[in-house]
Image (tube, rainbow, N blue to C red; front, side):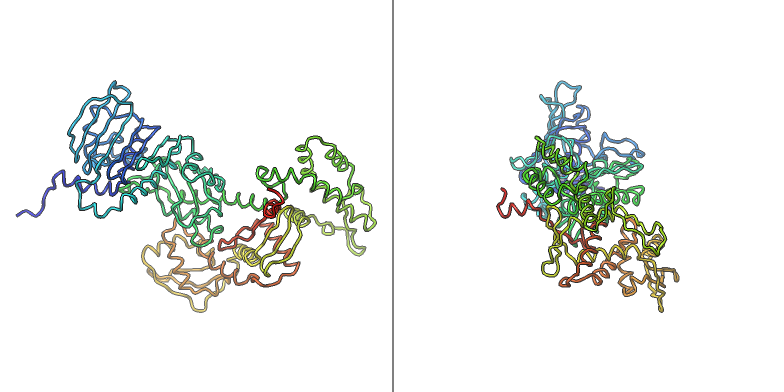
Length: 640
């Protein structure tokens, strides 16, 4: 008796349908992707009872020719490719010819379609994969597909599904990703008769507003990064907008929403200095890349792709996000430590206008007019005589800082009886010293910026012997002395992490698997740069013979385990390899909470924070908390 049976079409169609369409959201995905491939600019999605009762997708795409209607429901029939070579440059979302036939095999379908060349449309009824009725009807150009009673003929599988409400939630999540990935499409989505999303296809900003609300964009950073052969566009969240999970991450390649652990790892690496443990970045990013540089035919659901140059792609994502975060950090620190003109005028315009004359009168009263140079005296009179408050305020902001510096120098000169016609006091060289350039040192731009900052800063004290309290311009700033000093030490350690190597009296020997040995060989330079000298000691056997003095207290077994845990990373990086070890060392060496700093130590920390634009400690905790005068006056009801 034969033991091998040739399965009948109705059997293997049900098996194939289970691979392509596991849940209702899978059916929605395949239908919508067909609409996009058909060139639709408007898509309407309607779902009832989690998709089990009804999934309806209507588009204004090219439609299906009447001669092709029957083939549309046939297995492995597609209009998107013809030859095997085309698989290596797929430009459409669908290409296998499985989706519609798989959905038809487990549901009852009604399709109405019409092309521009046809005067009438055609309506087709399909039940369990078989065409049962076909007739001409009046229809708009495009296609409408109604899928009813999904999985009605696979009762065994129904017990494994979530409730209709939960399946509806999954569909809603998919549609949200769809809108973010295709921001130029007009998409309407309703669930059980209630409109959930309705976008006009006016770009990514509108799409993000529709999905995440009005506050999202204000907490995001624009990403626009190009490198030979690829372009990365979109938004990433600021560190303050970090999320407790990865649900707020959308990644697409050529408009195809995907998941990629390597790319996600590169993005996480860029965020590592800014986020605390178990916090995840928000991002909506799309990469445009030549179709022949990415293989989309590697996953049944087409949710994963393979790149010809994975390291190159991941490096591009890292630098795209890192550039955006660095620019954000610089702007943020300028706003915190800089002068009031660096603040957002849209937020502070009303307050600044109200307090302008108060500030102006204070500076005139503080800096008597006889100390000013002629040009500044004229500026003061021009401001006093100005009839337009906006012009007066603008002129005041432009010369206020220079006025403070000039007047303070003039007061100092007058106090010690010097008269410098250029308005700049220089100490005279000692009689016993030669007149060299060393006697007349010039300050670096950073030192000048710090001097300007410090001249505007008042140290008010320390709260709980932990939080330094500073007044800068119209802001009160709390600085966590431990977190700030920890980051200062961490950065210095990282700059000099491999300067001094300490040979091990007893080298640490360990064995690895074949893939781990290949990983070590590929990353030997980065491992050495991280402060670990490692050499081959036989087949798949290695030994560590020297370590950086920064890592001399590290257990070598723990380090090796940590190193090999990165085997799935796109590339081992010497910074990330030891960052946690150095962070721990910095934490131990930094001043502790409860330690009373003297004025010199406070100045040192403040200067380092200012010069290096420090925002977070190595573990991602914030270093500064800022209250503006406007915020305080609102709290005390001085302004409303």
